[in-house]
Each structure stands twice: as C-alpha cells, then as structure tokens.
Amino acid sequence: MRIAVAGATGNIGALTVAALGRAGHDTVAISRSLGVDLLSGEGLDDVLAGADAVVDVVNGPAAGREETVAYFGTTTRNLLAAEQRAGVGHHVLLSIAGLHKIEGNAHYAGKREQERLVTAGPVPWTIVPATQFHDFAAMVASWTEQDGVAEIAPLLVRPIAPADVAGVLAELAVGAPRGRYADVAGPEQQDLVDMARRTHQAQGRKVKLVPTWSGLFDPSMAGDVLLPGEDARITPTTFEEWLTGLHPGGH
Figure 1: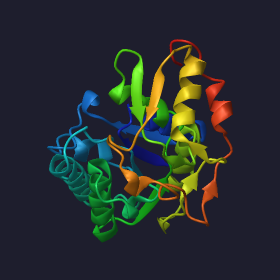
Figure 2: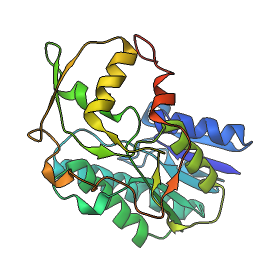
Figure 3: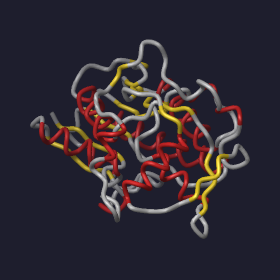
C-alpha cells in the first residue's frame, strides 16, 4: 500500500515511516522541510496522489490555546480536504489518552479540535489515543531547567515506547478504518518525577527535581486522569528497557 505520513520528520513520524517500510509498504513523507506546507496546503495534492491512507502525527507549536487550536484546525482541514480530492480511503490520527478529561492545557485543546474535525470529516478514520511517551518526563523537566534545577509535576502515567506507538499506527494504517480505537499504553504505571530522575541518571546528567503543580500541569491532571481506559491495548516495551537504550549525551 501507499501510505502518506504527515509529520514524517518528527520522532514518531520517522519511526512510523520505518515500520511501514519494514512491512513492505510505500511511504510518502509530508513535511515542510520536504516542500509540503500543511498550513497553506501547498504541495498536498501532489504528495497525496495515489495514497491509500494518511497517518497524521504532526506536532503543534508550543503556543497559547487559540494559536494551538488554530494551527491544528487549519492543518487538519487542509489535510482532510486534500485527502478527499485524492480519494484517500483512511485517515489515521495519533491522539492522547484522557484528552477529554482535561480542560486547561493548550495542546490538549488543539488535539480535541483535530479529533472533532476528523470525526465530522469526509474521510473514513481511525483515532488512536496513546499515553505519554517514555521520553516525556525528561522533556517536561527540560522546559523549566535552570542552573541544574527543574520543576516537574508528579503526574501518574502509563508511558509507552515511541517505537511501539509507531508500530501500532503502521499496523492500523494498512487495515480498515476503526473509528475510535482503544487507548494504547505501555505495560507499567510510572510517576513522572521518578521517570525524569531515572532518565537523567541514564544520560549521566545531574538535575535536582522539584515536584510541583504550579507549572504547566495543574492538579486537574492528578490521580488517574492520564491513565488509559480498562480496554486499553498494552504494548510490550517497559520504561526500564527503553532506558537501557540511552547513554550519556542522549541516544
């Protein structure tokens, strides 16, 4: 099959392209660096010619709520319209488990707009809600890190390996549209503060972590809010196994 991947140069996008390639499928990368602009729609018709399905793993800008919603809204509308013109039969969207329980977060608001447009859109679809990735904790800590100290919210998560997410997306993209798929999660529950500490350790970095709810994540995300539903699809790679792939200086 011919599968187009939007956000193909990002972490999950690159892994999805690789997983599809291993399974023998023809992949087309949709990325601004490759001359396709999702915000203007430029280059989309050419790149989607002959595509059977599209996987959308585009990452939004770090911005305020209105800007983020506008970005995801525009890119999703342009993608769906171009897919309809090209006769694409399946739109696969990577989303976030627990998305509809959280109000304050700009990124989540943007992803909700994406889901709304896809579910109401003209192209048959599958939405894949995944939990946070294994590298999420260190990324969150890096946002506030100054002089070897970082603030981080003590979120409860069930993190998933990026390669496992990509594998599920690749598998679903070549099948029939499934509508809202089960939550996709890793095998173990973790605390974000502990995850960040262990990641820094694996990278050979010393960072003092200060647990707090005063940053980007507030107490509305505490408890089991980010944990997957009971019918979740559990992927194999543990956080510990993912950590062993790290070494001082990153991967």
